[in-house]
Image (tube, rainbow, N blue to C red; front, side, top):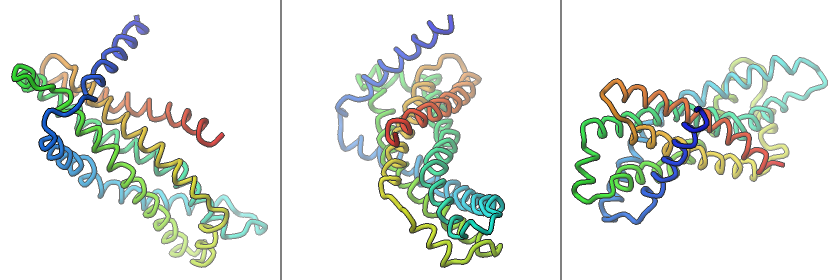
Length: 249
């Protein structure tokens, strides 16, 4: 029964995407909606991304310094470890999980409220492709703005690591900078941004599906928001493993 339910939902999800990825009926309206979604999804998330990034970098520096207790380990390895952990894993994955909670629940509740108040039905009656009109701007906005958020997160987490290292006396500025520069590969950033694009698509599309296909009352909107966050998080972790194997092996 569980397998049937999963494949039913997966089929509905694919059919929804087919409706979403069609040519917008009015390009001007689409671009107006796109700008609004970029503001709601990206700009409103700047503060939470910045706050978490700085403290993740700071914690990573302190933990690395405590674990490197051998005099044979150079202090520049703190900067190196923070850089690698932030760029390769913490920023793209942890921040995407945070966005799944903030953005995903917002998308699901917005579409769910429109469904139970019959606004989506009204759009369909007027001959408008509601999936394309409502969901496509959200997906495109997420795919555009999330890489910028993750890039900002990388910078701020490394900055937070530097501040923590200098203020606690675990590492000096020259040693920290040396660690950031040693054996740096630009492909690492490219790899992280590719993951971010996939994660952004998963968050926006899964959350849209959960909100678009609800039925019932206000209670179902809350349930859809919870399911959107949980399902998005599960698929982020799953695709994190798959993409890491494909891109780094």
